[in-house]
Length: 117
Image 1: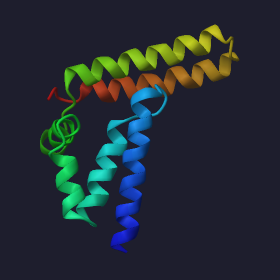
Image 2 (image 1 turned 60 degrees about the horizontal axis):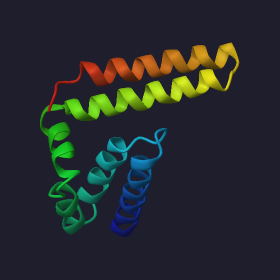
Image 3 (image 1 turned 135 degrees about the vertical axis):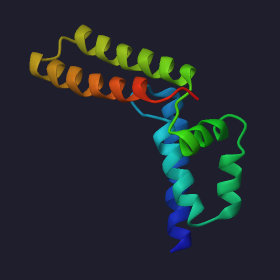
Image 4 (image 1 turned 90 degrees about the horizontal axis):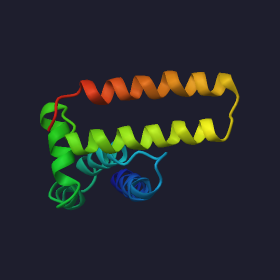
């Protein structure tokens, strides 16, 4: 079972890496899930992720205080605005825009109500 958890953790890290480039794919949730999976499978991979120069502080902020750093909040806001703006430019149907506005609005409310790391 440890190998399955580790493999799933590595897949989550890969998705997080893709999420750095693709605005629709979130990065931090995949890293949090990877940390969870690595904690159950490999202390070496878990320590690597937690002490990673870029990702480690984000994970530790979330684990200790449920906090999201202001820079990450701003990046998420920009990405969400860009995606919604693209949807408008593509002239998506109104019902799709309404669904997007509700879901993205809820995501933004969640992000901005978290403490700052």
